[in-house]
Length: 63
Image (cartoon, rainbow, N blue to C red; front, side):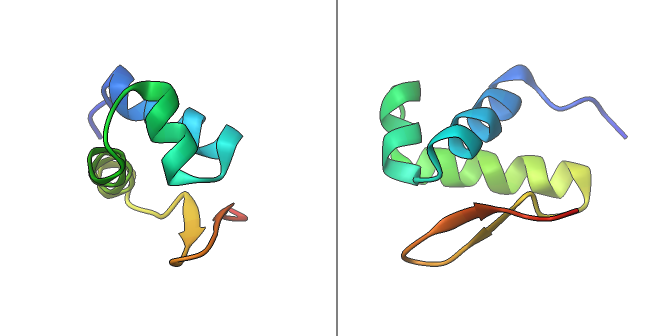
């Protein structure tokens, strides 16, 4: 497994701390869609989902 890029890890940390895409994206100075793509890319590299999400909330997934 390749080591994820720092920007993907930073995206996951920001989302885990804020638990909203809008605040995490704002803090990272990127768009929400970019943040979403980064999270999906990281989850793809890891082979599992880090977050449970729907249109209203984001939660860390129990692993």
